[in-house]
Amino acid sequence: MQFNSIEFLIFSIIVVSLYFVVPRKTRVYILLVASYFFYMCWNAKYSILIGTSTVVTYVSAILFKELDRYKNRKKLKRIVMIGCIVANLSLLFLFKYGNFGIETINRVLLTLRIRPLSYRFHFLLPVGISFYTFQALGYMIDVYRGDVEVERNFARYALFVSFFPQLVAGPIERSKNFLSQLRDIEKIEVWNLERVSKGLILVLWGLFMKMVIADRCAIFVDAVFQKFRLYGSTELIIAIVLFAIELYCDFGGYSMIAIGMARIMGFDLMENFRAPYLATSIRDFWSRWHISLSTWFRDYLYIPLGGNRKGTLRKYINIMIVFVVSGLWHGANLTFAIWGFVNGAYQVVGDMTKTLRNKIVDKLKIETDCFSHHLYKGFVTFSLWSFSLIFFRSASIRSALSYIKRILLKVDPWVLFNGDIYKIGLAEVEVNILLVAIIILIIVDVIRVKKDMTFDRYLFTQNLWFRWAIIIGLIVAILTFGEYGPYFDPKQFIYFQF
Image (cartoon, rainbow, N blue to C red; front, side, top):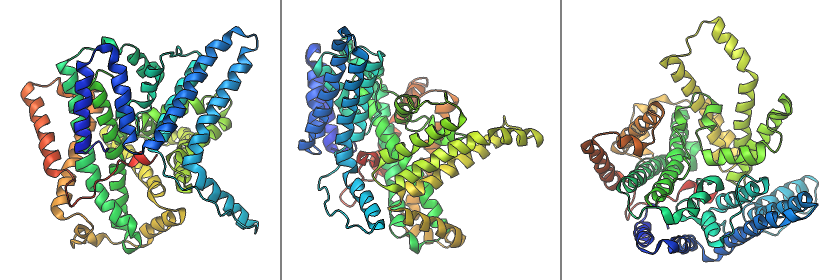
């Protein structure tokens, strides 16, 4: 059930209506049933997996409290925690990395001239397994550390893990934020016009990002990457830039819809993207991109590894570990590991050269607090990020290297002027629509940074006529320029596969 489908619209109307009319004490159960129904629409059998993850982490968290009465409680609690992590990650590894593991072993066996394994797993990747697994593990670890109180109401905790707006692609919520809101679910107003309006604005903006921008970018990007050896540097560079925009608008659009849907019902989910393409350094970029995952890895992997507390070399090693693991989290392919490695290397090199770069700036008397310098840094940051995405998008490392080689060797700027660029999936009018939509995206992100306001809150600082003009404009744009209909292959949200 796609967020950009009629089925989800009908489902949402029914669920939200029931949520507001049923007795407040039954709200948790209504949302829990709706969430499992939503997940079972993808594959009913895989609801067993999310149920298993929920039960294991729920029981483990309760055991932490029960073990407090024993003298050797620290050791026992550590055993429970490790067991819970192993159980959850085993399911994740089996379904997501089983075949990847077999292929890796076979490469080693072939190198040693040993007969490779012939077995392969033949099951589909459960939608959103990486997201709900991390959310459940985050809660369990928080209880183990004593950062949050254990949740003994099973239905409430099960809803925390399975809440349908953010179930299959995040944001990866924290128990401190979302579970505490679920505990007060009975206190949420039945109807708050401003809250509902802000939620609907975010939903519309998310649909605009997805249907008008991301899906239109995808047409060009897919055409180029499928036959990249037929194109020159200009088409390849444009394709990777559009993929960067597609990835942001696709995943950012999903997050925006999820946050908006939750807000309609009275919940505040964490912001997952904060104008990432206005970042002026790679470090700044990762503080704005996929915030829920970045902070999850920081709190539950980077800091436990030692963070920056054990010397510079150890800090750099920890950074590389986190980014490579983050890459593999995105997919069972070495291309994702390379993508993570490249972004980790950006961080390490940036930190290592910071002093030298500052000395050069001082020596040359470069003005850093001005638009031109910020523009330069933003361009470099976006270029580095886009380059790394070649590995993210390519089917193999060999394909990624061939893509890069062709950019360097097959220069063809004339396609911008002879009309050939309009023969790769998007006609000239479609390109113009895309350019206008991207300009609108940039304006909204600039407002997010300059005014320090999310899109919905900014609109509520404006006059009513302006607010409604924007809302109507978004609806018209989605209906008129959104990519959908009988001749369009609807694009699944990219991060559903993760």
